[in-house]
Length: 125
Image 1 (cartoon, rainbow, N blue to C red):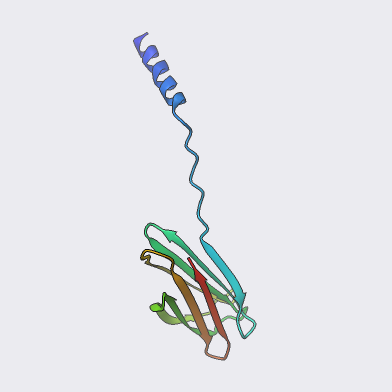
Image 2 (spheres, rainbow, N blue to C red):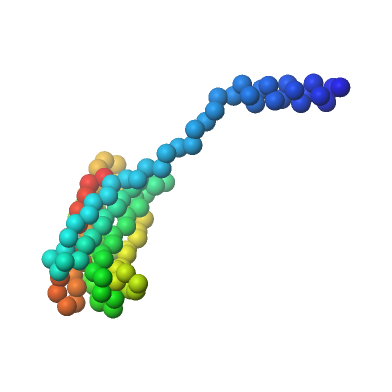
């Protein structure tokens, strides 16, 4: 009988607790646009655990093309490298988690194709 009373009391306490709704995922800032060669770009940035998660994607619909890519935060280079468009979509992606100093941040991504074409994307988060 004592166990039954403890169980009922425990259930009553749990039932009285306020329901906690799951936190909504912050999509951050997303920008899209066109490159000079007809390719398209997408730049996404969101705050995550004290950092900024940045994703830059270029979709050219042609696989095997080499692109030189630069990402900056407030004018400072945070990534410089090359990417090659891959099947099946003929696109590439650069993902980085970068420092998030106080205040707003200007993220700029640029890509230049070896065979012509440039992309420039920017956002403020």
